Length: 261
Length: 246
Ligand SMILES: Nc1ncnc2c1ncn2[C@@H]1O[C@H](COP(=O)(O)OP(=O)(O)OP(=O)(O)O)[C@@H](O)[C@H]1O
Ligand SMILES: [Mg+2]
Image (cartoon, rainbow over all chains, first blue to last red; front, top):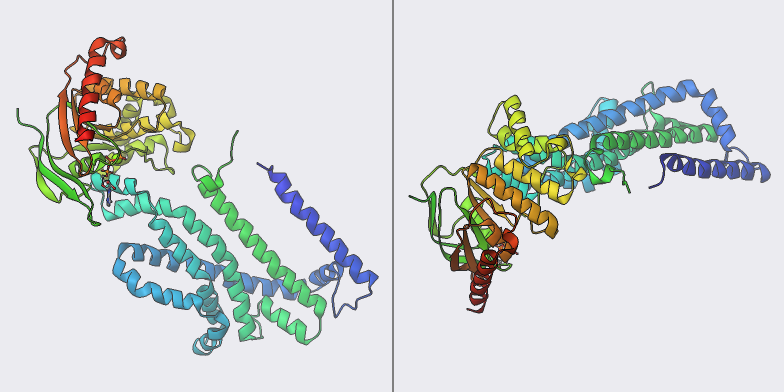
């Protein structure tokens, strides 16, 4: 197995090389900064505009994490309900699928019209994008408990609750966590896309609005700075959720185990 | 003495139409070690699952003259990978709402009885195949059941480990004399372990013969090379070959 430091250093080296090439290209070809700013200029802008940008980052983070929390709560609860009652699953799951396959840009305007509160409407959009992987993964996980273990529980007269608590939920955990990692990225994408559609200004503006605004004003370096913040946020969310997943599974699950030879 | 349970004309037809077993008559006597011996697909697992109440009986009936108090050992260890050996063994007690302290104490004792007192905190992935099987046996015995059902528990193990586990199982049985129903497709294993061997034949699964081998337990060290053991193995093999030919 590759040591941890290699996994960190290797992508970093690639990143630094690419950024260096980018900076060099921009300078050598004298590309104007309203077409393509170099990384150093973007960094300068990020520092200079930090007050505005950090406020927007905070808004986007709030929407993302609230949407993710709602996805965990509602997706998790629904999946448990669905596996307890076939009828509930049969009658409701198709609608969850419909919600999932409908492009969010197509329904976001409606939601923004219907819901007065902008923040809430953005939250709903982000939730719609994010919750499905948690739902479908957890359903799969709850149903994938070892058949013989299910029989064993039956043999000892376990109640539904006991089977859920001691067997189905732990068996579903790795699946849930895999869904969570996908949903984390999707919640951010949902938050950004919804704000693009909403295009709202004012005090409660997230990073997407800053990108739009900078585009109108041809402040391209600032646009890139906001974009960098979005990507950075996505990476941090992914790393954070991977870490949580690793910590929860490392004692027993194949995916999190270190191979010892 | 009245048997604990009587199978009368028991048959099983699965939903897809397969008749897995038919017309099985079998008595389970208190404290007896019985083996079900037969080739793959002759319905051994099906019979065991019907006795355990995990599969419906589609023909005939099973009469119980005692509360159905069972332990079950599957062909695979079937442990919960997210739990330590101790918590795995505690499971049956936990499901029956035994207080946690008592459950832990009894689970520890059960693990000690199968020689795993030093592995209470180990996770299944940290144990060898034989050790996992021991945990599985400890889990089945922790409730001190009247009847222990075992479905080819040692089939996946190497010969050396299997012989050791056979000896340990026999010692456990000799100590508490539960009723054991042991499924196997090994003639040698069935003769070594049991007092009675039920030979099964396939298509449809049925009982073809019964061989009684009353030899003293505990087996003495030379038992595996004794003429009595060899003779019993020959008899059982002959019955098995007849059953397959019929
Ligand atoms: N759930 C099922 N549905 C349909 N047919 C089944 C099912 N389970 C078993 N069978 C069939 O019933 C027959 C007996 O199966 P069973 O598993 O009881 O055999 P076995 O003697 O335990 O075999 P093995 O030694 O390979 O474990 C086989 O022909 C099998 O295909
Ligand atoms: Mg079988």
